[in-house]
Image (cartoon, rainbow over all chains, first blue to last red):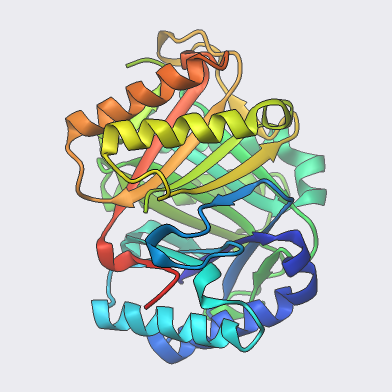
Amino acid sequence: MPLIHVDLERELYESSADDISREIQQAQVDALGIVPDDLFHVFSPHDKGELRFDPGFGGVDRRSLVLIRIVMVHMYSVATKRDLYAAIVTRLGTLGIRPEDILISVTENGFEDWYAGRL
Amino acid sequence: MPLIHVDLERELYESSADDISREIQQAQVDALGIVPDDLFHVFSPHDKGELRFDPGFGGVDRRSLVLIRIVMVHMYSVATKRDLYAAIVTRLGTLGIRPEDILISVTENGFEDWYAGRL
Amino acid sequence: MPLIHVDLERELYESSADDISREIQQAQVDALGIVPDDLFHVFSPHDKGELRFDPGFGGVDRRSLVLIRIVMVHMYSVATKRDLYAAIVTRLGTLGIRPEDILISVTENGFEDWYAGRL
């Protein structure tokens, strides 16, 4: 049950939400080995001014912000997480989303920290 | 200071936010033993397409998504967490919200990770 | 890469988002020692009814809710966190935001839990 929350500009949301959702899900399937129907995505489209970032922090030429927050169980190795990031940015890149514009933040919890439709 | 964040369809928000808030709070009081006025709830109503889920993942007949994210101090047992989930889904069930449509995700932090109105 | 997410009333957002963003960032620079361009802020303006709180919990005279959620790497001492809270509420106080109305919640993760524009 990784939970995905995507904050992005409304324009990008309106043009590409289906594609973004599909590519993130495939990235999770490929990198984490989850089943394709283990899908919980929340999109928060933002108006101008709600997403704020520095255009050069870390030596990155950042022009927009696509924030992907992931909550998942503490069970994946560092290498697997890096594979996930690479898969996400590569796949979103095919949609014209620049790797530089993506910020991914993972928060971990335990199996006991989820309720997913039945006790 | 459990912090509750509810993402839900706008239609459900408009019809039932007061009821949902009251029932979640009572569930917290009953299961966690917090005082009733320890209440911090954020509602994010969503338009169609912003909440994405699979209608059958985990063998659950899911028709909508009511996401309840909880941030709370690491101090409750697994049994207490399960009691909380049961209390929430039972109480929201009385409002016509299907248990299958609810996703609960808990993230824990420490006492030192909160500021609640005074230093 | 502390990630800042501010939930606040839409009226306050519209009048003061630039100021709030600047003051929170300076508080981070002063208390955490981050560089000024390490800036990732998400604002979620809320309509009436979406932010719910008790006006007296904890003996605090609360009249509104400005929720500041911070995700940051587990590397700061308790004293540093308290310095951060103090810096934030002091600086937002200069904008007329009451310390009593602020709720700060920190969640920690690891260095490996971030992707910030390049692999």
